[in-house]
Image (tube, rainbow, N blue to C red; front, side):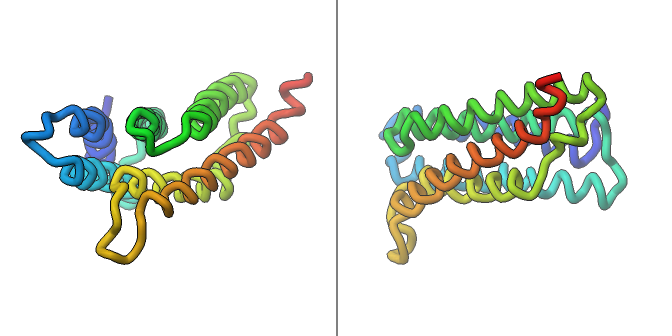
Length: 188
């Protein structure tokens, strides 16, 4: 394992996961629900920023590594899955949405692994639709974690609901695109 700045940022993202989840289990005497929402939102956004930053730094500093290429998507999937489980538990996200998003991540990860073994990894590489899906998820989750009215401007929960359902739809659509790209290898 190569410890460089991008990989350390990815590890930081993984370390933030239990904190995003754990803040909701703190006693109410320590933090109000609003403070828990704000803390979880801040940590999730910090983790999302490190996701962008570690990739940018890896390219900029020429510190790309096989370990980083493996760990980065794992960290992303863990972060999203943990946040969705918490949101379902809090009643802020429908379980169907969480199952669709988490199930797709598992299925596409398995598909990518299988396609790599077939020497066809490029056919299921991340595409623009997958990136848009990720952006929509990364907007939806902090809104649902925040849950309250944001500076009197908008209801974060309502807006988050729209975004998370859009993310679920994009998730299904992107899964179909990946399956279509892999279909020749799957049927042969």
